Image (cartoon, rainbow, N blue to C red; front, side, top):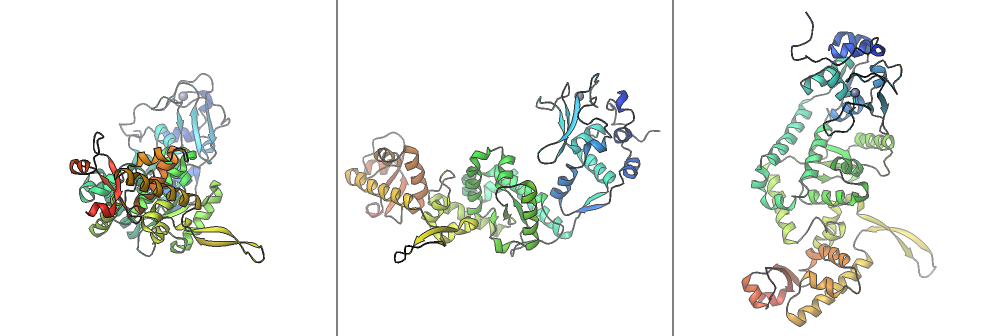
Length: 444
Ligand SMILES: [Zn+2]
């Protein structure tokens, strides 16, 4: 009797003569663990987490596993191939891939391209992904360390995923749920990355949250955002950090062992910049209350994802809030001139706002005053038109977004017009626009 289960009916094509001596291929398609384990004779490895496990698995030499004499050109294992039309190779990240240049296709219609896991899954004709992964672990002597701690952390993260997907979050934190509607996908990606990076041992920040690291480049890749628009990722991240759904860690809060690991990976992956460290707090009710408090503040400050920046938070809520959201950017180097000696030196200062944006804000405030004096209220659009000879429309628009949180301190308020307000200010436009008015006049 064969060792195959009944589900394993259409076996891969192995009739090609040049593949006949490839015993490993046959053993994989027969799911012969014992043969492969003996043959591969891999030293047992216990990984700290899923991420480390996959990093290893994707880099196992596929040409050796398949015992290919000509890895660049051999007969495809998955279709009746008369002339060699398959190859295996390593991509720029060191990941081994199998490619059929002929008939075999991916679900999206692209040429069939398989990593080690997908290759074994297909070759072994596994109907369950879990069993394919178990098979890989068995034949290569691999395991992932599990502890009480890592189980706890994964359960907390699973609970976040559940509450997000089942609309429990939107019920408990309705305002935050609205604020993050364009950012949810990034949050979900981060929760999954965190889950893959739970260490077997207790590596936490002082609050006991799990700590993980990822580069903006990797996040952009996962989100399908072009590297030219990497700023969009950091903007969306800042929204999550503002709501305390994700915490960005200051260097001194990062366990030393993780810093070292991150450095090693940065060098390995040739990151231009170092990776960032994050933590995701567990969603206990008390925490969700704080999240929603932030959500309401976000709305009251008129914040938007498009305006999100150090400057927006700084103008809205001051230095401490901005520094907390951007711990790695809280200081700037500035050149200072000693007027007596003429010497120029570099000093490190708290990042505030730039001269050029302060100038723009001054001009915006002047135009608000002029227009309000004339007709009692103004709108962001009117200000953009008013300043259009000085600044491009988009520049004024972004500046306005970055200063919405500051308006009240400057003596103005941005309100949504209703019928009563429209009558009061003689607004004849259609609909109910957001208008900017003087706070003092609003009280009367
Ligand atoms: Zn093929």
